[in-house]
Image (cartoon, rainbow, N blue to C red; front, side):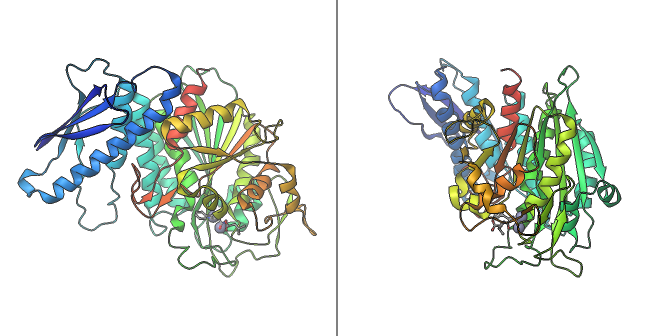
Length: 461
Ligand code: BES
Ligand code: ZN
Ligand code: ZN
């Protein structure tokens, strides 16, 4: 059966209201002030529309549960009413986005998969919005796949196909090449594992792009994190650790989206992919690792592995002469404790970096985050934090003190960059235990819509 959702502006209220119009239709009333073109209302209104789209989606799911199979809704139409004055496409796109993002299921591993999804008959006005929803689904699928079905080499095989489908180029380094490059961080983390590591380079440059300096995205690809020999100590904390490649998944989602929408930009994605396990040859606390950059690192906790593989990738990024490097990583429990599941914590090596002085790039990233509903919170990044990484035996150690662990992790990474750089710790928002807003239980694909929107607008400014 078909279901119609009608949007209509409404003068007399400050919030969105909706009601059942008939058995097959909902009327959604949007306050008149929403379609205003004023930039200041853009953030709040877009995300309120997105949240409303997800709420109506969940209402329809409830109806379908109650209805007999002959009467269940399958096809959904979403439009403005004919006598609507504004027919604001930005608001409609936000609503569609919320509905679509809520309309996701991961059923790849069911033996008898049942697709309970709605078929949406309305298309986005902005092709980048629809591409970023598709990119978010790619990222969610990758996070939701367990290690049994997605290790580093399988990820690279999957990327081969995706690169052809979406239109980006791919280069994969296997173990031999990684050894030749002396990526000591990556190799050490993977030592306890039987499966081989890979290093993946995704490149997308639009036909017309005259850019010489790419934006480089680096994604933490720990396909599974047991903690290694410093085995995760907290009860059940390992259950969700297939999400430890959430940064890698986001980078893949972003580049797929930009490439399939043929967005005008030059972007490179770097993904070091490993698994962190105890094993006969696993690296041990106390080991000193020589990184690709030549720096030596004393490993005091094998569970602080993300920074070791990212460091090699960040060093590798130097050869691109990048305009900006952004890394995404489920890096620390400390980031999760700082902001919960509600946002992303960010740091940067901007030189004017006493608190509240942030780069233009960071400023626009925060503002795009508010619009797309993937919020970014800038953290202090004083050099004092870095002192905690001093080592007795090597250049630095991979562990700071017990406080502000997300910032000392950022300080560790800073040792390996010599270009403008932003670090996004997505540990809080990458994986949910329950449905929340337009996110489903499991991988959220956080970071994809943020960076697709940011890269698209960055070029214009
Ligand atoms: N992958 C974890 C961080 C994480 C925690 C991701 C929760 C997603 C949800 C990371 O590798 C880790 O274990 N970090 C340690 C570092 C510590 C040993 C310095 C942490 O944050 O506890
Ligand atoms: Zn870890
Ligand atoms: Zn990890």
